[in-house]
Length: 230
Image (cartoon, rainbow, N blue to C red; front, side, top):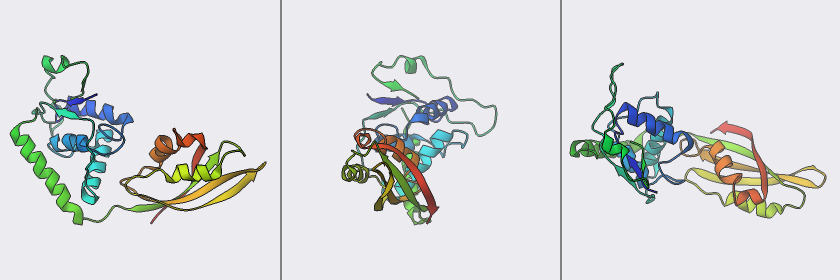
């Protein structure tokens, strides 16, 4: 289902984007894509910190541009009018969405909006500047020890480890692992991993990858045993 954005630089549009990103890491799908780049370049400036979900997403995309870039195709996003920018002084509100925005096709998710040539040129220049800033200090890294518990003593621990290591993403490197007896013939696995802080959220890794299908066929739960900055 296509995502349609409008008035992305207005207060109303930013609030809708902020609400949309409350339960999402990316505009579409489960990895950064050209859909994220389309929205990123449509923003005329760094979003205010009061829009915490937009700011989180924006900083993440900025970090990706500085490190490895964004190449995934995405599911498709349409940027419509975003001519009304967010006021820099208190009390100035954004433009009210037009009736045409409210009558978009039901198959589209109309969150926010057709950018002008000037906005597009400015956004592209800003994206290029972000890429050029790659010489800035690298993002920090952390060493994490995960405690992975099976369902019972009949769980195939080799399959469990394979399920864990099958999770791959930018900024994630799996390390050594070992089996630790729990009791009643049950063993759990402890595994080290190194992450790039700006690219990997351990909570999201556990909730969205390790404790969901197909990995949860072997994994009952995961806990963070140690988390140390490198």
